Image (cartoon, rainbow, N blue to C red; front, side, top):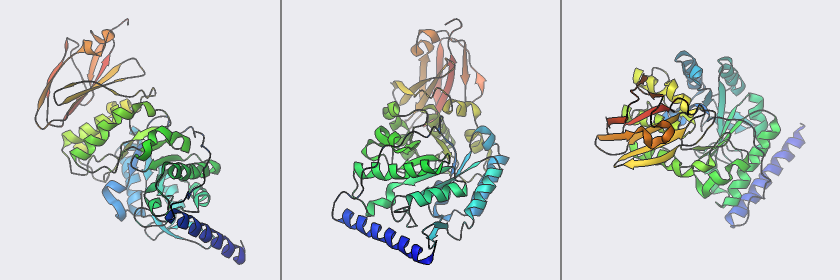
Length: 405
């Protein structure tokens, strides 16, 4: 591109930005409607991987990302299904003369970083916003959606988290504007020809689960940001039961990332998060430092029997079967005909659970087998389950229907 074309391109982008921002300030319809985006065929089961924000926030560097990729191979996470290595906000630098986004000094050559991740059998994720700035004040995709999508594809990016936060300063916060802005990037990603999982973040405004699929997205946040504490985690997780009808293969409700291993909750509470997220099912994106995890954290994140529930190909949703005082009893049908029942003690003291198998239906009154997924053992197939749960603790049981049913 010649220099006068560069200047003309930059002037056009600046003019568009000024016009749209003025329209937003005046309360007008800042974003023209955009056609619905077809499904991309990706994420037939909930995405699994790691994201930088919960532990590193703005401190994340390319060296950290390489370290996470190496750790995921060494500790078995990759082989257990965790494949995405996702960089959240603060990687962005400035745009060059042609308007192309460049990484900042913490990251340098993003193509080289993607190659490093890919060489380990993993996939790279990245972050942006439809605003001129991201939530953390870095360069957003405002006016550069097509260009950024092409850049991400050229780097070898496999996952985009697109956060509306930064657009609030430029556009009126309306359903129509959010739909149009998310569709705009969805179309841009589709036109690259590269398979890129598309993740939306806007805290669940405007019932996004009802219209998210028409943006081309594969998952969307249904809640505000999670915190590493029991109240935040449990409120976000159990809320998903009311939204189950809008989640399934290729389009997932996302209650936010896992906090397991970050230190703010007990191991019982972390097992509850893993149990609940897997039973829903929800994306499993670890948010801790994967280097040097202790044995208990590894045992939670790497429990393949629990992961198999999350990744069951039928992708049928969990439902609330009953409550016993502070204990929630959830159940989910699996593709092999079994049922998983989860007991969750939401109370502040230990609670006893008494549950006859007949509550699961006639086919399960005399089950063929019962498997405790956290203790990795088979249980007696007698009348039912009768045990005490610790405060904020959980149990996951996979129950096989009676033979011949």
